[in-house]
Amino acid sequence: MKILMLVSSMHAGGAERVAATLVNAWAERGDEVTLLPTYSDKGSCFYPVSDDVALVWLADLARVRGGGPAAAARRLLALRRYIAQARPDVVVSFLTNVNVAAILATRGLGIPVIACERTNPAAGAGVGALLGAARRLAYPLAELVTVQAQATVAPFRQMVPGLRAMAVIPNPLPPELAAAPVAARLPAVDERRRLMAMGRLVPSKQFDLLIDVYAQLAPAHPRWDLCIWGEGPDRDALQARIDGLGLAGRITLAGRTETPWQALAEGDAFVLTSALEGFPNVLLEAMALGLPCAAFDCPSGPREMSRDGQDALLVPNGDRQALRQALERLMGDAALRVALAEQGARSVRERYALPAVLRQWDALFAQVGAAPANSKQETTHD
Image (cartoon, rainbow, N blue to C red; front, side, top):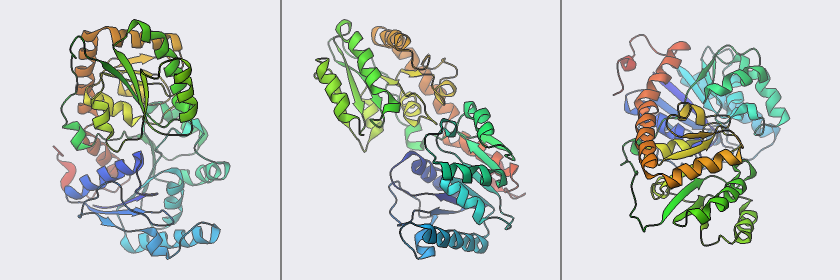
């Protein structure tokens, strides 16, 4: 099968990492795969891309750099010419602006497009008025639109009426993470323990709320520290909050890390306090590594990842008192931590393993008529 994957760039980011994971897996099993970043000024690949994947830059095809309507029109025409010549069996596109371009570039070519939203589109925060209007016009022309969580389907159908079909497709666990040792451990009695959090230091992650709740728990749990990984515009305000509470020795703003899995694996528990998410990879990764987790039941992702709270402590969204109680349980009950760690790791490694997600992708390919009748991958991916 000939698969063309479109993504805005291959810089560091969740969508880019998933794109690299998928194209590498499809190429490894024998599909003819092309990865085409649409970034206006080209760039480089932060995540490894297999030599078996053809890497084509739209900036080279269009021979134009920078922004503006004229440059955008040239890139769209160049994309259409390339697709018409390459004749892929299916186009898979990530991110709203790329999805709109893919849909427009394939009109009349008879090539199905699977347009993939990579955040929570119902939150409405990531798309401007112009792009939102373009999405409402273009998406009903796509053969299939995907979101990452079931909770997003109904609100998105209201936001973008007239869609031909929708499906839910989760991010796969990277194979190296799925095979990593489970980090669950029982530290020595006198050893310090770390509650981990990770994300951009922005208001939607609600790290200020987390700091306040931890401050209430810190006196009763003198061996527990809080470590928040990430960078962002809220750093100074968060540090001032920590200093004002007198907890500079107990709460660390650790900054950005190039090795998030190693950083998470050094913790004893993980907490997600986001007000909203699309598909919180960091929660999935923490669970896969074997960290017992607590998470706000925000839209969307944590409820599905935790199987309605079976595999992690699911807290009513924004409820400070409930979060305090959940963290009290995690920090005070070693047996609970071990049980959640083992159960959570086993559950997400089974449900979000790459072979399982690839089977879901094959079903989507078949749904849009892209899988050849003699496709060799209709057997197994194990």
